[in-house]
Image 1 (cartoon, helix red, strand yellow):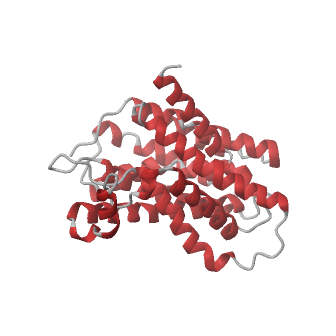
Image 2 (image 1 turned 135 degrees about the vertical axis):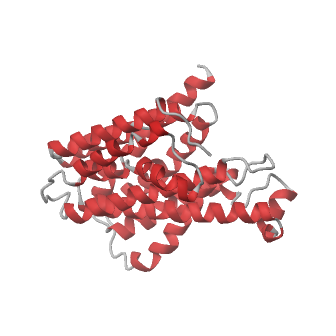
Image 3 (image 1 turned 120 degrees about the vertical axis):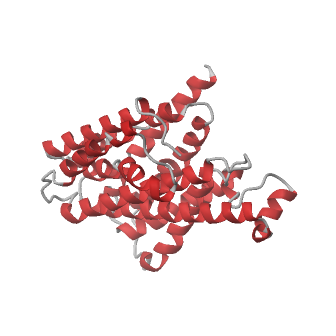
Length: 315
């Protein structure tokens, strides 16, 4: 197996793992705060222990340079900027994780993932302000397409059900989840692009993911207790979510990103919105409205076009 084939396989497995999140969140009786906090606690521990890059919040390499990054980051403008970008991106990712769980507890998994997938729309709209990168003309042509998909998915007409007790509120939370994820992508772009002197600006994206999970733990802690009696099935679900659906999936994405171009990686990760509704249909019997499916298809088409056809944004 070639390096690119192995990377593609890892991206496919990551997309499949990501796609199980909605169905798994619905499978536990724990509330949204408990699921989000416990999942991120497990994921943060795994990422921080297993991946050295996840611990480099202020940049730096190995040995003395890593020690300097940990204890003397304020003395270096580059490391100070790296830490601020990592923590800021981690905060946006924290909102993404928490809002996703709250949305998935209230509306269908299809609505949740389709509305979260509108993140590229917010990237296109906010990049000129936050990144000083102006979208190309062809990219701007996709804004109405994303907008149409968002409206169709948002007003898909899902009825309240056992697995989706409050779809209207859940849909609104999912839209904000898409906004938070868009801000996360903007933060990763700002952290990864080279600075004027030619050096990378910040720590890798996996550090922001680890940081975001740590922030989720701290943010959810006051609302998580008392736990009461936790059923073994609930414990199995949250361990799966933290260990496999978040931590292992991000390990695979990080490794795949080293060998695959960004458009290819983005297209392979479209498995997440493609498979998420089917897991929920299989395990929970969810039947999204036809308008929801159409909205998801439009969003997916716009994402494919953005990844394969349009050009780079203008500086």
